Amino acid sequence: MDKKLKVKSIYSVALGQSKQNLYKAAYIRIQRAIRIGAHIEAVALIESVMSDRLESAIAVLSKEQVHASTLGTLIGKFDKISGLDPELRFALYEWNDARAFVIHQMVKLTNEESSTWLERIAFARRTAKEGVILLGELRKVTDKVVRAAIKDKLK
Image 1 (cartoon, helix red, strand yellow):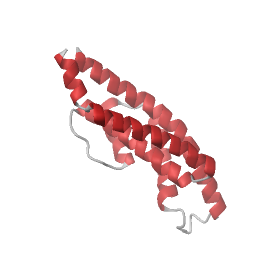
Image 2: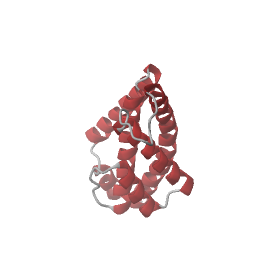
Image 3: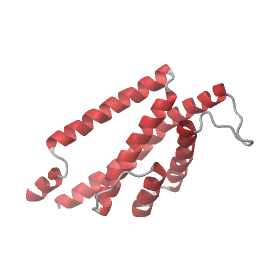
Image 4: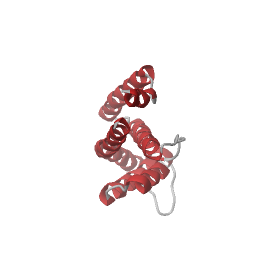
């Protein structure tokens, strides 16, 4: 029974409830943002949830506090510790590159990149929709890792 209390003490009841409320609001906002065409906002929120899930899973596996980091760095750390499925790893890195374009390069032009605003918005829409799907896949993996680590602590 003491072991169970120690695991629960990682997150207080209030913190757990606050985290749950933030997730619920984020998922609602992601869907709303996609529905109304605010795809850049959706992409940013998806990245935030992905990063949080990866940080939590890394912290549980490494038994160390994880400080905020870029999504790409977190994907690499999690993969090194847990061994991501190669297809999921590739998809995450690919989505991260698309996310970076949507967030940081919507108005930048180079000799290699000269798409129109409408083409970039269409890309942002695809990136948001693909991100929702990928987030679900990532959550399955990270949630499974966290549950298994907590279960091991309870033994």
